[in-house]
Length: 250
Image (cartoon, rainbow, N blue to C red; front, side, top):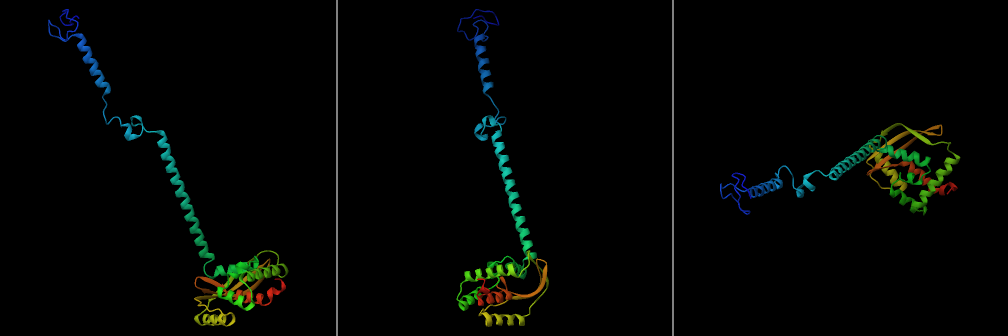
């Protein structure tokens, strides 16, 4: 091997030149090669995230994970919209109920539409359970028979006495009954129907009923027991239907 510094012919395995002491070319090449390998394998930890931490090679963002995150966010947004819509509908129903069907007004609806729809179930909801017990004992009947009897009666009445078209109504006026009138109503229910109830409120209501263009005025008394409202005229009408065995239409 020839020394690059002095040109001396050194032995083949010489590391330094025996003449001038400079490193031989082969030694320099090996040192440069080792330095190059060190530089190639070197990386700064804050420039490249480990694969174990990021879940991807080299710390790059996985497009699939990004798509999943967007989908989760979209689903959560949809759920909030659905929940919000449900709450809004419930709020509207509560407002409608409070305006149109709160208190005795819902009982007025059942009173008129029970006859209009020939619904024994709707009409029977206007009387207390104690009254149904009275009917079963007095006329040897059952709740189901009473319901069917009332339904058939209103079918017959609508076909033969009523007008064509649906019934509508308007509350012309109403006033609350005082304690004395309520006490008299309680006594009447007990005397006539053996119904012993504590009435908390009572309303006398004047209705204008439109039966297919034929209008009539009717007064009815509605009373509250617990959380439910009932109608005195419904009790009277059902009792009469049962007494005359459905007026031969049953």
